Amino acid sequence: MGMSIAHIMASCMGGIRTAGDLVAWMQMTRKMKINDAKAYVAGKLGIDVFDLTDEEVMRDIRKDLGIGTVTSIAGSPKGIRAKIKIAELLGIKIRSVELFKKQIGI
Amino acid sequence: MSKKILTRMGDGERLWMDAEEVMDDIQDGSEDAARRLGGKPLSQEEQEKLFEILAEPSRIVSVNPGEEVIVSDDGCTMSFYSGQDGGGTGTPLSRQQAVLTYERACGADTTSMGHSDYSYKPVKSIINFEANDYYNISQVTTAPFFYGAQPNMGLYFQPDGPCPNAAELMPLGKIDEARASQEEACEYLTDDLEFVGSRLADIGLEGLNFDTSGSAGDADFLAALKGVERLKAKYPDLPILMGGAGEFVLGMHGKITYNGRQVAGMYTPDQAKAVEKAGADIFGMAVNTVTTESVPWNLARAVTFLKATTEATNLPVHANVGMGVCGVPMMEQPPIDCVTRVSKSLVQLGKADGL
Image: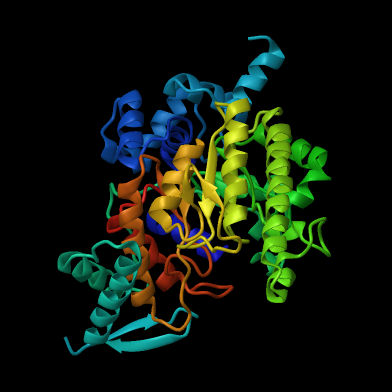
C-alpha cells in the first residue's frame, strides 16, 4: 500500500483532488497519450494545462461543475451523478453512466 | 565525482555507491536494454539526468509540477484488506470501503477491484458475486473504476486444470504434446477472458485490466490478445488495459504467432504494437527487476525499454511499477526512496503516459 501511495505522491495527477480522473477517462476512451489527454481536458475546462493539477484551481471548478470533490459536500454530486456530468463535459461515453441512464429512461 | 550515493540493490538491500559506480551502472543497464532492442542506449545527457535523480540527497523525489501522469492500478485497493500474499495490510475494510478510501483519501487517478486470487479462471465460477460487487461500487465511485485480474494460463494445466501439464511434458521430450496442451489451454483461457469480460461489460464495466499477460509464455500472451479482440468486437466502447509480464515474452511454446509475427521473444515495443493491433486502449509495460544488479542499473534498463516502447506505439503506455518491475526492488515493502526515484525517472526520461 505504501508503494502505491508513494507513486501517487511522486507522479500522480491527483484523481478527484484535481483533474486526474478526467485525464484518465480520455486515455481510456480515446487512447490519448498523456499530453493530448491533458490538452483536451484543459480545453473543455477552459484552463491552462498547468492548472490541471492545481488543487486551488480545480477545487472550485469541480464544485461549480458538480463533477465530484474530494471532500464530501452534502447535496453535491458524487459517484454516478458526478460521472453523468463528467461524460457530458468531456463528450465521452462512460459505460456505467450509459447503463444508469438506460435504467431510468433518459 | 567522489561522493557516495545512497541507493539499493534490486532485492532492496541498501548500499552506498561511488558516483562513478552509479554512472557505470546506468551506462551498463541502458546498454543491456539497447542491445536486446537493437536500438540506442540513453544519451549522455539522459544518463546524467538519471544520475541526478538517483543522487538527489532527499529521502523522496517527485516529478516537476506540470509533468504529472495518470497513475492507474492493478488491484491496489485489495492491498488495504488482504494479507501478506497480496501485499495487503489486513485492514478490516470492505471492498467498497477500500475503493472509496483509495479514491478519496489517497487521490488516485483510477481505482479497481479484483478477486483475491487475481486470475480470471477462478472468477468464472463466482462471476455473479463479482458482477454484483462491481455494479454496486460503480454507482458510488467518481474516478474510473477497473476490474482487473491476470490471464494466468498456468491454472489450466493439471492438476489445477484440464490440460496435460506442459512443464512436465517438455522435460520428457514430448515437445509436440506440450505445444498441443498449451494451444488447448490458450483456447480455454481465451473463452474465460471473454466470458468474464462480457458478464462485467453487461453491468456497466468502465474498464477491464488484463494484468501480467504472458506470465505462462507466448500462448498466454496470445490468449490475452485474442480476448481483447473478442471483447472489442462485442463491446467496442469497453476500455481495456493490457499489460505484459516482462520485457520479453517467454517462448514456452515457441511457434505461436500473432498477426504474422512470432510472439515468443517479443520485447516491449513489439508487445505494445501487438496490443494496439488487438484493439486495447492502454499498454502496460513490465520490465523485470534483476535482484543481483543495483537500482541504477535496473532503472536505466527500464527507462531505455520504456523510451523505445512509447515511441513504437500510438497507445498510451503505463509503466508497471509494482514490486520487482521497472526498477522497483523485488520485495514486499519496496522502499519509498527507490519507488519515488523510479516514478520520476520513468515519467521524465522514459516519457511514460502513466504508471
